[in-house]
Length: 343
Ligand SMILES: Cc1cc2nc3c(=O)[nH]c(=O)nc-3n(C[C@H](O)[C@H](O)[C@H](O)COP(=O)(O)O)c2cc1C
Image (cartoon, rainbow, N blue to C red; front, side):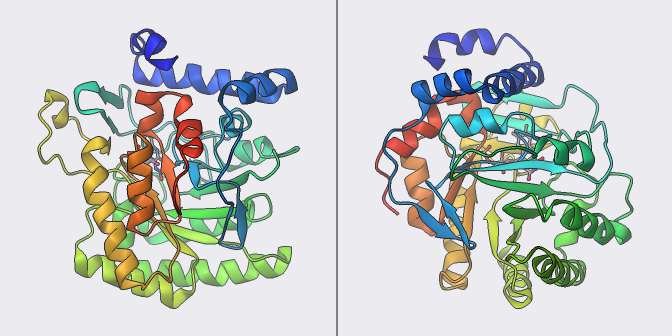
């Protein structure tokens, strides 16, 4: 169906199309009859085996990546499409506008997107309210956390710790986002000294909230695709050493290798087909270096069943989508889940 109405969707600016979609998911997802209708249309009847990872139970390996449901508005609708997990956010402590518009650019001929959103969101309190209420059975709801643009890098830790405190009770897992290219300085948190300090503080807070809520609070870290081998090794050492729970490989890329579109010169993070191969290679590297001990969540360029299988074969345990939803539409998660993935 989506190929039929995609041209109409693409008449809208990417951001307007996104808001319209999230509003529809919100409206349809919040009412039982429309939720049932979405499920009837899209939800795969047959799941493969469930996955036990991070101490959680995932109905299937397919998840919605961070940045789609930034404020926790549409997740009930997204769950009805079949996603086994949804990563809300990236949320910041205080509301912020993000960068000036336009800030999302479609590149249809490359099946790619460049975005420089800069974490626009209504802030932690707003999101928390949207996480109340009954949850669909078997849905894993994670939250991606980041620092406010106005928080100096030296104080970034305060933002992350506060967000862990705020979201620990209502989130099934948390993702520490230190890899968005659109918040000035954020990626410097991946540098050895800063990364080590930040993750030690995060690990201590994890222990504190786990004790407080009498559960293990899984915390994963989302990394940038530009890390070279040494940098990746350093990050993995710290993650393993601090006992955090996993990695998301990877965020969007600043690299523009081979991109022919004039839009390649737009600043921001590239996603979709052009980042697939490199991001998958990173997964292989991480799986090899950690000897499969560290749970890997794949993100980057999954547009179809074969791509999802490739991520799993490379060593990922879960696979997230974003740009694929823009080009392939709401059928995509169901199509992949129904395909009989091997994992
Ligand atoms: C418009 C847009 C906004 C995004 N916002 C976030 C974000 O807030 N936090 C985050 O961790 N990743 C964000 N991402 C990155 C995605 O979560 C994902 O890691 C990336 O797009 C690669 O996957 P894909 O090729 O399937 O899109 C965003 C991506 C897009 C396209």
